[in-house]
Length: 356
Ligand code: FE
Image (cartoon, rainbow, N blue to C red):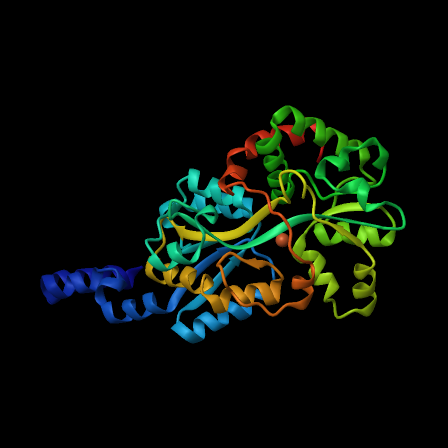
């Protein structure tokens, strides 16, 4: 304290205006070269992607560009809350979220700025991007897995069938408050309206084998253990088990029945993970380069090969036999932003249905 004071007085008496200004100026004004280097080399990533293989991809980006990626990981909702409370002081540059509705929410709450990038615009199909504010990077399908010794595939060809009284006590799902379930319900609202969506949610709740808990992998394992006969999961969790280093997991996953729901109607529900540049990004240029990197053919292939998702970019060569073996299917034709639009209705329905 006394040092600071005497320096100030010294400045006023001895050093004169220019030097005093230099002393009192913020550090970044004094050393533009250091600042430029820091700006070149750093990127703050807020990510709700929770897949360990992503780090290898970020390391590749750092090797190629010299830009270090500082990652903060949390759930979608927690990240959005954090961004809001940090406001203009937020250090976030890139926001990656694992659900289209949450990206839509980030857009609506003004947490993103446009990424003006011809590379992104050209690489990512229009249905997977919104106003240059966010960009889908991978797609995933929500599919039905079942125990073929207990249920016939014909019984569960549609999401609607999970509400059938014939499945009483047989269905496992994760919480109705989770984005994956909310987005599925939002898509049902989009296709069929709120009334039918609510009847469906109530029917599924009436069929639950247990109180919703755990992630998608826990639902698959619930079918394997016999606790339930049928469950919903994102495609990559199933593929991950099919590729498990544990023989027992691999073999029990291979014994499951798998259905691409709604092939003769609206198509299987698709969601994305994706990202955008934070509204107050201190390093917007690095953020844009990072998103462009993730949309590049090599990174798109890496995401597919390591995390078993599908690339959003077209004509990407992937090398993932277990993923490829899942085969082709009819995906729902719904702009992913519709999932966000119907999310508030979906949340109200989940609440009324008691799908906790
Ligand atoms: Fe996930």
